[in-house]
Structure formats: C-alpha cells, structure tokens
Image (tube, rainbow over all chains, first blue to last red; front, side, top):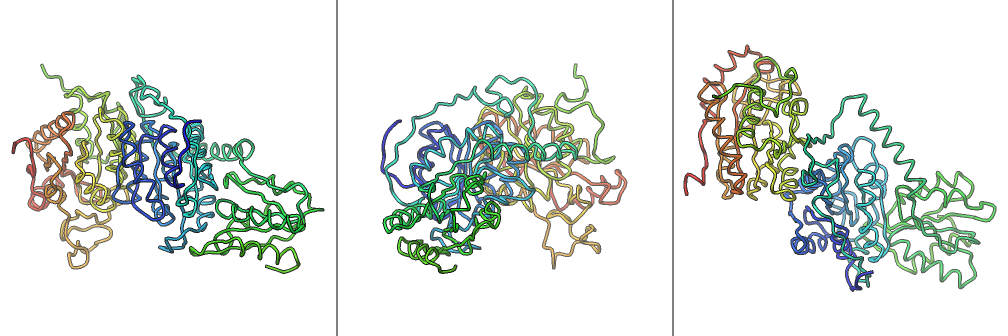
Length: 357
Length: 247
C-alpha cells in the first residue's frame, strides 16, 4: 500500500478517487459533503484532471454524463436533497450505459430535512435512484479506510457493468477523522479510453454515438440485460461482514455508522453472556440475502434492524429473507439525532430480555 | 469548382422532419461549416431533446444524446476532458430557453469553449405545438389557443440579447433561415463560431430563426412570410457580440 494519512472520511473518498484514476468531478455545495468538492477542486488540477462547480446538482450530474461518455473516470457527490436532483442524470447514465460514481453523504430527511447525519436515503439508493426501474450497485462503507478502498474499486465495477455506482455513507463517517492507508496512484492513459466511448484518443476512426433513448424492442432487450446483470451481482458481488453470528440467538443487521455502534453493543452484550451477533451489509444493493436467509432459525430467536433513521428502511429487505421464521425488531434514531452506545445497548437488551419494539 | 453535395456528416436517409421544416436546413448548414473547416472526424454533436433529437437518425459523426435542457452541461464535461474536440450543442427553444435556462446561461458565463446552435421556431414541435418561451405575443399554440397573452405568460425570451450581456462569450449572433441572404449569413456565422472555438477563444452562440409549418398550421411558404412579418421584427437578426471584431 501507499501512505498512511489522518483524514476525514470525505477527504479519504476524494483522494482515493484521484488514485483510482478519477479525472473529472462536477458538484454543487451541500452539507455534509463539502470536503469532497473542496478537496478535488485543488487536487484534480494537480493530476491533469478537471473540476467544475456546477450551477446545480442537475447540471453537475449531466457534466459527469458528458465526461463519462468520453471514457474519463468521472464522479459527483452530494447529500439527500441534491441526490434527488441528480436522479434525472443518474437514470440517464444507466440508460446510456455510462460508468460513473455518485457519492451520497447522507443527512436527515425528507425535504431540506437537517444537515446532521442520518441514514434516511436507503430506499432511494436501493430501490429507485431515478425513474425507469434501474439499479446501481450501492456500497455502504463504515470507516474512512473502507470508504477509500471502495472508491478505489468503484470504477472497476462501473466500467465492468457500464452502469453508475453509488457510494452511500452518512455525514458522521464523512466528517470523522481516521487513519487511512491510501492505495497507490493508478495511471490511466488517454489512449486507454474504452472502445465504446466517444473519445478518439484511442485511435477510433469510425462514428461513435451514445444515447439514452432507444426503439421499443431494443429498449426491452436492454431492460432484460439489466435484469440479468442485477442477478449476476447477487451471485458475484455481495459484500457482507458477519461478526459473532455462528452461535448467535439474536442477530443485529446494521450498516454504515449504525454498524459501528452496534458492534460495540454486541461486544458489551457478549461480556454479559448474551449470544448476540452482527450482520453488516457492505453492499446494500446487491443485498446480502443469503446471510439472512440461510441462518439457522431453530437457533435464531430474533433479528434486530438498527438504523439511524425512523422508521427503519432496510426492514423489508430483511423480512423478505426471514420469511416469518423469527420476529424482526427495529431500533433507530432519526432526523439528524445520532445513535449512541447506551441507546443501542439498552434497546437490544430490552428486546432480548422480552421487551417488544 | 464548388460541388453541391450532401454533407458527409448527414446520413443518406429520408428526412424525418416535416415538409418545409427549416431544421433540416439548419443541420445541413452546421455540417457544411464543420466539413469546410476540416473537422468532420473531430466534431462531437451534443443532441438535445425535441425535434432536434431527430439528429440521432441523421448525424453520421460522433454524437451524445442528452437530457432535456442539459446539453451545455454535458458539453462542459466533454470539452473539459477532451479540449481538442470540436464540441457543439444543437438545442431548440423549449430545451434551451425554458428547462435548460440555467445550463445555457451558466455555460455561457463560464466561457466554456464550445458552440451552442440554437434553433428557435417558437414552439414545442415534437410534443405537438405547445407554447414555448419564445412564442410570440398573440401566437396561437395548443396551450395558448387564443394567442399568447403576456399578462399570464410573459414575453418571448431574447436569448442572444441575454447572453450578450455576459462578459465571457466571444461571439453571439442571430440569423433567420427564411431567405437566401439569411442562409448565407448563417453559414458564415456558424463557420466563424466553430473557427473561434478551435482557436480556443471561448463560448460562441448562434441562434437560427426557424419555422414549424405543422404546428403553426401554415404552408411552408406562409411560415417564411410569417417570419418576415412577425418573427424577425421581434427577434432581430444580427451580431450581438463579437470580441474578435472589437479587438
């Protein structure tokens, strides 16, 4: 690995993007993700890349659409209200089969909501990032290090699939500082521009065109191909952390910041003799279905969904795998109020000692 | 000896534009200007939404089809990462002066080094003739059946005038395609805009006044006359900004 630095989650995302070969960023200021555009506004020109502060989130994602069409590794970042505005462009990226990375450093919602951290964009991220029924792979890191590692790999997935990738991380993780082992700088030459791109730096001497609009039978075929791709993700690309699950009678399911608080609670409850474990989805889409579906429900007495949003949004994905074989509980904080160790510990303790939530 | 022929950038296919529509003439003028500059292989057409999107069927050079109103944003992403290319957006009036107003004004204000060709026919042609931001006062459309009333819908937007107030643009001009002189002026204007872009001078904007026989509910000849008596007096052709001439 390269070098170790003490940096904010947002900065880790930005630096890892540059090292992954990202050479175009467009975005619009919104809290709590401002460190990403600020960092890239000075960093990208150092490596021959371009930074544009767009007039809106709508314009910014369409700038990314243009840059991505040229085969340039491109990204934008925002938070919930801005991701809603980017929905148009993300849908067009999927339609035009363009790879790009979108980062959502999430905050309280709906609406302008709150500028404080929350995990209120799960459903938007996993079910409907835009109109037209498409999906993007959704990664949910729970540390600055993991955020850097995921950003470093994000374009590999995006280019493999010719599809946008979403990184969803709450404002807490975006702003806490941690030590990050940064990956080495990856050099991508202009002549390496993909064959499908509109670049001519790769020597292409025939017409290139990219559109987000198709004749009906072709669109139907493209929809079906996307469906096959989503199925392949479930087989090949699920990332999940299972912690003390083997003998656990109660399983917590949590991602991002909620998983860190939950892990602490698991350790404390284990000390008291309670058999508790944690399943942490790292990919929210594809969802780690098998980790939950294949649990031994003769042993498991309950699943506890812990999220920093009320009501819990991941619950239906969990219930679809539990299939009624044990109760599913939920606990959360919301609106920008943070989960804390005591609150999560108490909630789990209450549930496993016979309370109901 | 000059040979009159189909530009290589226009596919040898029947036109999807309605009979008498000046869009096909506008597209041809763009193609000819690019070819005369020897930029056919280097040009990249950013195709917008509306009748302009029919370019998808005819444009034989590189193109990227984009969301409604966002062509200047997409063109920004293209040109910032591939500055050697000749990049132009081809937009209609609904696309550019309504849903894409933020994108066109901001790209012009940043002085992005590409060209926007603006086909102004004062209506939403593709969707069936609704009122556009450029529809003339009193002009009848499917959403202003008694004629556009400024009391409730405001006045037609003058984009050349607006854009020429900005510091960054280097060449802003409007031409009417309803006369041989207008066509010749447009040809020169387009060529100048593309040349300035390839010299790295900055943002160039060409507005082409066109027609819509289908939705204006006129014969093609009547539309050309209507443009003389109604369109041109309001949207006055001319060069609104020319930094090169000022220098």
